[in-house]
Length: 296
Image 1 (tube, rainbow, N blue to C red):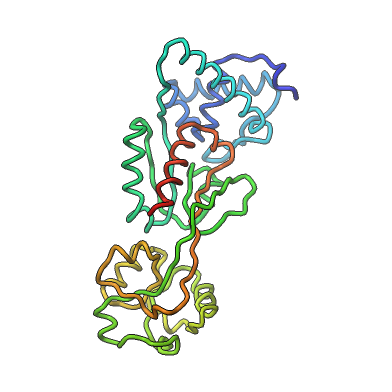
Image 2 (cartoon, rainbow, N blue to C red):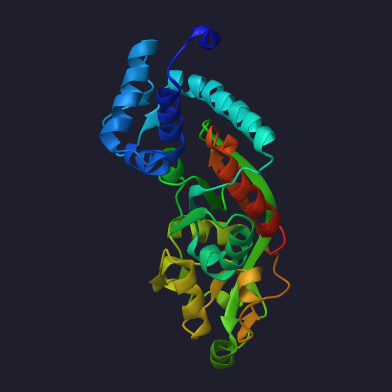
């Protein structure tokens, strides 16, 4: 279909754009200060006018269809052009406001994100930020988050991923723990040591093996999906943990185990959904996160 030849109501277009950017009818209705039934009728009327389906129904969130994604760029361009005209006439800058949902690991959220959120709040105080902690990327594909910060690159074609930088992870333990068991001098000295494990333990053991540290499940009596929980247990002398160098540097009571052992590279990726990347508020947060996470 040639979208440029289609004529439709501006209120319907605005309802469609808000629903696409907010991800649900209820959030879009709040953003536009209208009732949800009114907004739903406007979106349905636009679909009838165009004779296409713009959103997939039956899910908690409003997911754009292929036709909806195609239309989104045109509608957004229309409103941005109208906004530029208005700004030019009034001489006022456009405010950036609305909701942005972030998903990241709990260590990044706890140790490093607060300082960046402070910068975002200073530059765009009308943006509402919601932070969830998760090790999965499905929150993006399900539209449960707008931006995700991860240590692995996603493969889904609908996602945009940018490598911020690579950091490293190494073995750390508390001084008290090493005073108790002795300081290992070689990987063989670790064969009976207590380690703290993450999710996918078999994968973790295999990864350690590639670095010459050969362990079994018996080395991991304690496991957790929470990075902050692991870090705290390492600090309390419960075992050896694999920590990011930036996290370990926060705790002077921790010592590097086997300093000569090659560090494990850990990438930091920032990810968003491809059509959300053109939202002004999401782009602002995306860019600020990218800038400041590069320097932690």
